[in-house]
Image 1 (cartoon, rainbow, N blue to C red):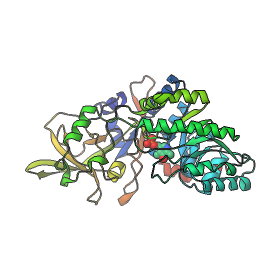
Image 2: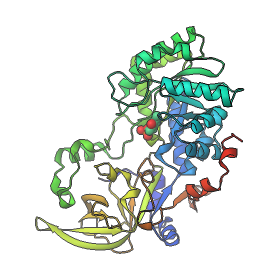
Image 3: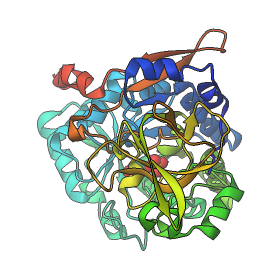
Image 4: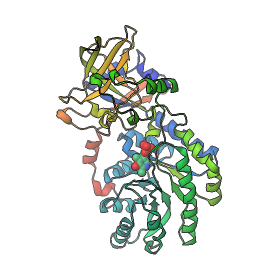
Length: 456
Ligand SMILES: *Cc1c(COP(=O)(O)O)cnc(C)c1O
């Protein structure tokens, strides 16, 4: 299924684009990032808030991509960052995000993370009464001059999530909220699924909780509705025709994922439009405005929509048959660790582009990685490529910045982790300049942790 292309992707894939030069220089698989697109994506969410006259705050859900260029784009566009570890917190600060623009989420956070969060004036999403007690204890003992900023994470009704607090826990929290060591700024949640309505309904219910908190003497003026803003990868007709017709025989070895395991690759109301739908549902925007409450969102995937691609080189081609029909199996010079969807019993479905793009005879093709694992397939599906691939061709998987490229990467088989190449427009906007980003692990090991976390 061909993914729609935006302008920078077309330029990347054009014959006179930078792909060959980068591939020859890097000599292995690589990821391309285009941070300008992230700035645009943030701008679209900001516009939805402005159009609906609601005060909004955006925190980028950092686990979706480790690249430093994402943090820089957030800093440039006025977005904060949602982090869940000391490593992510340090990377966000080094990338130019103010401590006060950080949200710290994650279940039962370590003492070190709570301390670093409080010392940097970050907003801390408290996951349980016990965690709150520990934060208060740490503040009294170790950071007596600070008042930690917190929101309370809510366990949605009927949810089996292991995160957040029950209604009873929230109702009984008041005695525990010592206002000299913590400041209750509001409530947060994060829902699975990609529907606007449950998010709007839970946010509306939390307006009442904020008003109640104010009666109890807390500022409570923010509600964070988490992430889960969907991304539309493929046109509606292609996606629905796939769902209607998909058949295990389309996959190498008959290894088709369960039909309900796929990410919804087409979405009619995606990203910023989904935010607008949430704000418009039952007048949520009006209620927030009247109550003087800011709405925070924590999008990960949606801020990275069409902000990156992953490039492999074809290292070998072999031909097999299924039901007497020949098809090719490619081996590329990387692995499915750089395409995380493959590790969740499902498949990444936007078609890779065989580059250079030429018309030939359509060739059903699966793609395997350069490891000794039978299961290391980047595409089990026989993709109808527009020509037969040959050694040295490039295979470009589109729209991989959100979760695909680096969530699962490791130096398996002692293969190096693919570098990230950052593309920026030249002054006239016609040419790309590219730079190779330092490996985040090297940056981390060179930083002096205590100082960079404001704890020295
Ligand atoms: C993962 C996560 C996000 C980001 O989710 P996306 O689906 O990428 O938007 C935001 N908030 C929390 C608490 C998360 O765990």
